[in-house]
Image 1 (tube, rainbow, N blue to C red):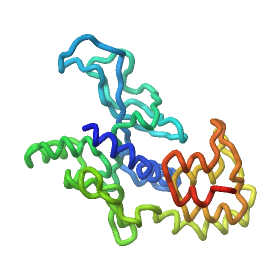
Image 2: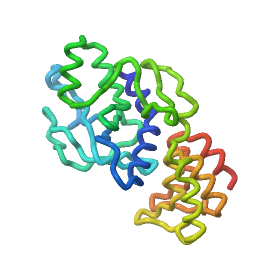
Image 3: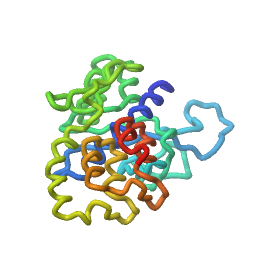
Length: 253
């Protein structure tokens, strides 16, 4: 399970990239998007399995600012008293233990869920999946994103699998490029306009790892030194999730 946690954290950037593009869709495409993290009331003396020190629970309405993952607690705790379903919570990325989203009924991510499913027989897995109303697929092949001719890419095997190079760029980044360029040329004020958190379009796209979009923004003169309200540059946001191609574009600018 600890290894599942580690892989989930290392692939969180693909979850966040999908969330970033979901926010730009006119018609929502995701059935769900959630992150798992540990919660505790503090140290407990009891060693009973019925009263563990930590409860792993899911969060919805996820946001990420390059430093903290925030969301709304979806689960009702079994024994914890310090939190309840519906609470707004904040965790660092190294506290995330799983993530998953569903697109057209298909689940992507879900490392801990699939580890547990791999220990079930076929009947138990079917019962589990039917309870969710989702297709989790093969528990030994964790899907990162929908697989089509243009969306090729998954991480196969539980631990240590290699990703398809195509997974490094979201197809929407390339498809949206020409229209974005035209829009920014017509309305250059949009290029460095900030939202209510001090984020420019370059901040958002750097954190989403959108190489094609970032390239266009830089060509048109986006401010690479702009700071968000929490003091992050576009480069620092790209570094927070390890988007190497975007980091290379932003370095020394």
